[in-house]
Length: 220
Length: 114
Image 1 (cartoon, rainbow over the protein chains, first blue to last red):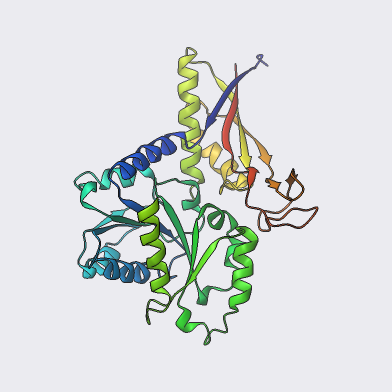
Image 2 (cartoon, rainbow over the protein chains, first blue to last red):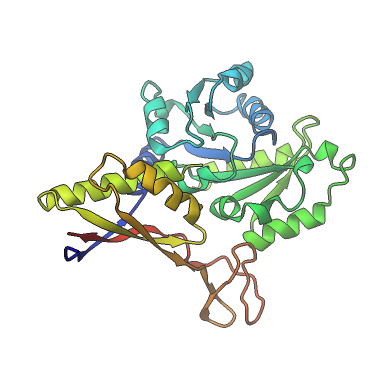
């Protein structure tokens, strides 16, 4: 057996993504655009929530969205109904967005023309957690139809997020959703996390969410 | 499953390092992997052999050191190691804490070269 020798390296595996995300964050700050990313499992209501958010912000703010999806451009088509610039990032077989994809998609957009930029990640509660996209606020969504223990099953994504949103509150009663248990699960994996309860269908809870966005944009 | 793309990044990193040293053979790569890194050890190991084929790392080993989550408890004013990642509270005084000291690592620490 030939002799092996140990060489110290000490390098973050995702260094390349982290550097790109850092550059994006600087660009966003310089352009004074507040960037929010949305992560959740497939079908938790990210697109409906974003559609509502865009429509409500549009009268007073300049907003745009990037939407990640494996195969279709359906979400971008849906979101463009809010009459704001929307671009689809089709990832092919990749299960998450990376900083490079965000950076590539922004090439022909002038960030100075925007107040808010939303990035909807691919529906996945595992992989997106490792990739910084340069966002100022990461929002994790869970719907009442998914069960109260979702945060306990996917602690890493909840831990990397800044804010949680419980969607489909209009269905809570029908599916016997235990709101208290859901809050307890969130607090267990991310103590002191801010949580919003919304219904994209009725609009309930959306005002508080928009207030948070406006406050962040003013003070961050 | 994003472990394969993570494995590819590690292979690129090691290949570059091997080139820098005149194309030495890499026998093993050492990785520190935090419990909150979002990456699964077994999936990394599974992807490793396949992804290394046809690269300078063919037949090399991936050695993973698992790093538990350590939080700082403000009440005890001490760092505490947790045995679970879905209950972030101090194991001594039960206070909830968000101050993660360790456990998010995904870092290549060393290479074994021949």
